[in-house]
Image (cartoon, rainbow, N blue to C red; front, side, top):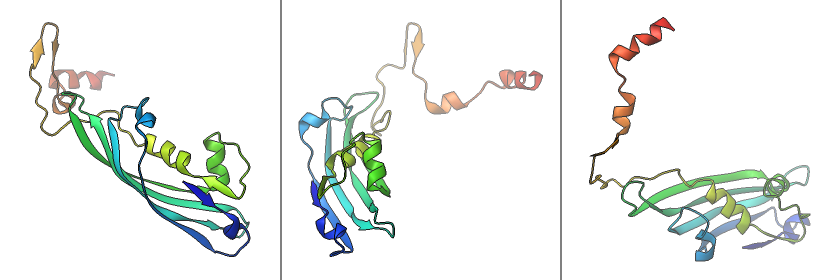
Length: 159
């Protein structure tokens, strides 16, 4: 998604409005935990501040398709993220040390911010473990983890 910055740099336009639906190639998903990504919508604008720095503000929304941590079945997970910084700073962070010229491709910036929103694990609301116990292991829910044995709770007072 290439953006032409000439009018913004020459003060012809005060801002560049962005309102796009983006489809990512399956090739980009290969080294991620994503099964698919859909409904990615990017809105925002590029403006210049009083120091003639280009400021980028983007709001990115969409849906990840991720494998369930228990059943490995696909789970939809909605995400939303925002980018609000100087374009120069963002390019330094993405190791895209190109000098800002007349056009810029913001797709790598968008993709990097989307990748940061992928959760560690997703559990389907319909997931029910088949086996709850086995030899030397058992399935533990988050509620059980938070329930502390009252006898062990008294040991905290000693320390």
